[in-house]
View (cartoon, rainbow, N blue to C red):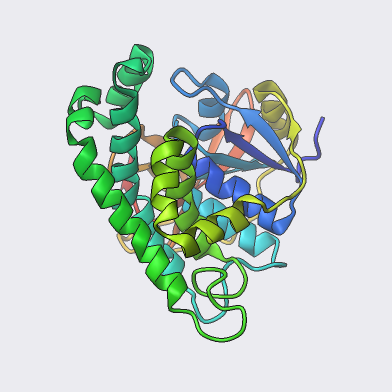
Length: 314
């Protein structure tokens, strides 16, 4: 069984958000374990770890469980500082860029992909995503608006092209803000990878119109790292049970006045609001950490970013 300090990523191959983390692993050349999670519910091993949170990816390090790509990437840079992906002088910018790539641009990508797939989409997948989002997942409507979405997608791709064209100095323009890749590149790469993996003809057509972006995308795609070790969900649960969460200093800097030791619930603020209940350990303007104890796994600490999540008493 893997060491309790080993990185374990719960993901599936087609997940664009998981690809962000996989790219970060490659850029940092990190060893990691892979648990293939189901694309749709039920996800019994994953939700046993998270207390009900179902989104992908989830990073497990022993008995510490990190939910949401933003806090996963932050934790990787904290633990493994060479090479840093949060490049000096650009702190905070990556989070601003992620708000765009994970929001408007991602929704455009989803519409293009499922508009292209149309009635080929598995009905079980549609039903699952409707339950997740709380609204219809209408591939017929996506097909109708696909031409407009394709134009919008290309426009957003050209923002990367403009940025790459604006670099100065020797080697500038290789990456979005530097001569080496950083978190901004990881965030921006996601939608290009997602559309290219699902609708390659359209993506290639766009990349031919944005040659600097094409070269940037290919450079990142050629990044190599350590091949993951495949383990099962049951293996991951066993590792969590053997481990204990990292000790944290209780924090009373919560913007809403919650204090450590209170019973709270946490959920995303947009969709997939499966509330995770536990005891508050830390909460401030950046992150929320709650502790959960089960007979099966013992004590786990569940980590969430503050941006994009709601925490309430209960």
